[in-house]
Image 1 (cartoon, rainbow, N blue to C red):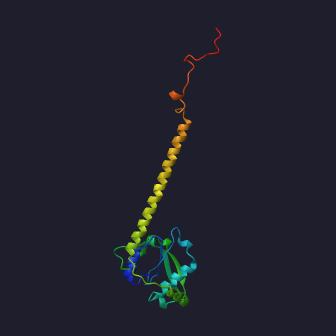
Image 2: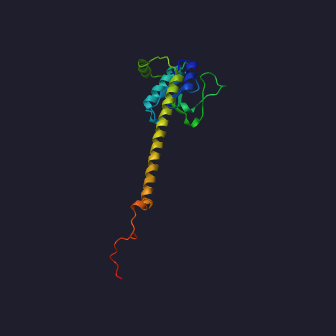
Image 3: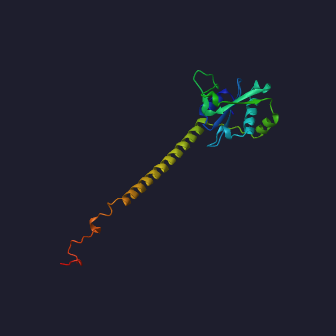
Length: 191
């Protein structure tokens, strides 16, 4: 969660493709991020977790915290769109259809208090974390490509060996051929 609009800006810039971004709709609030596991989609996130994140966003909005019936929008980080003309901490969306909303009728102190008990404050270098993540992803892609290339070469070698076994080139070698012209005994001589 961003502490202020400047940290929100860092979160926007250095987020991960696996991050889900939460924000109070049409009001200022903290940016809350939920990091999914690799391969997970937005549909895999339990509704209880989405409600927890929405309550956290509402509790960290000066205006939204005082209101009932507010909407919280959430989408994958990749869908966030930032231009130079936007204010610090402000974002738009690449695809509006991928933005989801959840209605928060009132603040649930039980949820917010439970989340505050697990709160950890850390100084984080967002760029460094993103660089490490991207490096791991590149290494994984290289490893997968190398395995695929090795498998392709093995298949090619096997295909060539099979083709060679089916051809007659291995049968027609001088050292394995025999002839009956070399004066061998011919038992069919009846003249």
